[in-house]
Length: 294
Image (cartoon, rainbow, N blue to C red; front, top):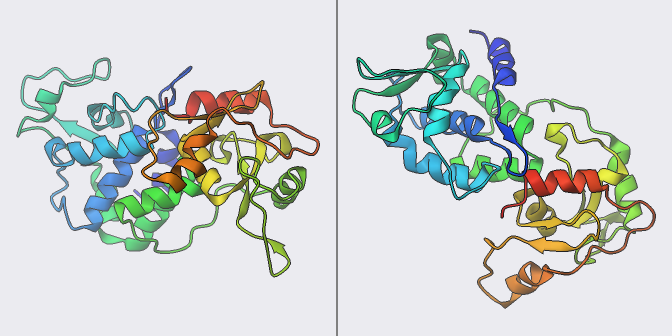
């Protein structure tokens, strides 16, 4: 399979979605984990055993999976990625296998069970570093915003390789209009600075992720400093649609006084500095349902 054909198959991967718990990003995370293993020189015979990646996949899903982190379910992507031509699973003789019911962990942990890539895909991933880099960049940009892309890449120590062209063109006016709408101040903490006559350390953050088709519209943007942009994208904070009250995830635990002041004490405060256009309730609701970690 050629690179462009593989990218097309990645586009076809089915991501489970359910109201109030958001999109599950487990399959893309499994792919990235497997590619990182290939980069490390593992899986030379195109056999990847669940027992060898279960703990790492569990942590990866809990950190970046985009859903209820109480139930990471690493067995689910290992099994159900086989709905794509990219991946398949070999199970012990006599075990019933279909996509109606996820294989149990006991079966996946059986020494005879392993997952494997379609052979031409494995050959491409194993032999071509630049293709791996482009595939990684493609997956990251398709499913996560830029702030989280870097976190995942660093977490898995994935190589950068070539600089891939962005999948979607960005509206250059979006950042200017959003920052102006918030008077070039962070809507959460008020941070504002200039370096070489240019606003510094503040971003126009998408509420409804650009990776999921969120529009480059001022009502889908909030001016945020780097820390609070990261916190919004990671689901550490969210904003109530009607009152614009900031809510901090109960899973966030500050370790010292500065961290408490920067994030933990935001709970119950409100975004400020809006000049004209407030964030849309529709986009904030999307963030509440799909990103915020309860």
